[in-house]
Length: 272
Image (tube, rainbow, N blue to C red):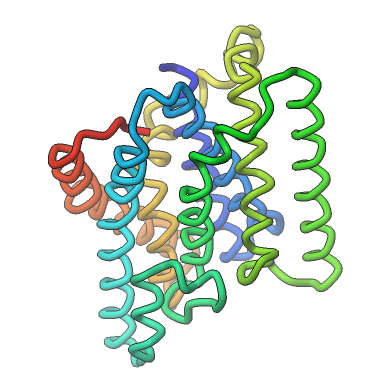
């Protein structure tokens, strides 16, 4: 549907904002990761909110979405790191491959993997959140207010300590939970459809549905995970952006799409 295609474009712009932050071109770009969590909760609530799919199908779809790309990206990063003289500890590589342990310690292989660790924990909580989150208008608005207050508090805490973000421990999980739940509540309230029915908002979303921006969204996962390769080179800024785009495009067509299609064929799951 048009709304979800536009959200794909937004995901691509968020991935680009993270890269621009690391390149020193977008000071607030680290907040784009929080935007990923909002989109994740919104899209998953839209695809699975009716509870027409089994929990097993949901988890398998998540595995098909993340596992092949994360595994391949980590392998590439480690291999290139060895060539560059970076020798990663075997335990650090294993933790990065397993993803989940990164909730308690940061990865030296690819620090961006922290958000995937939080995302995986949110996937585990998603079936329960579908049941317990409110349906009433007032309750939803209160829930959104709580999520906004929680996220704002964490941003303020981060800025107070002059850090780039909370990426480990319980606060990292809360950093993902607040926007993720907010996204679910936005979907449940029908605000996405209402936004698209507004003429001005519809024009904006249509622009986000343009082919170049939507393609950036389609490759956003490898783009997000592989940018560390470019950041560790001595290339100029435009070269780092081009290298990240090239690597992400290659991985999307060679690994991400074929692996996802094959895994979903093994055990059918919707494309959320």
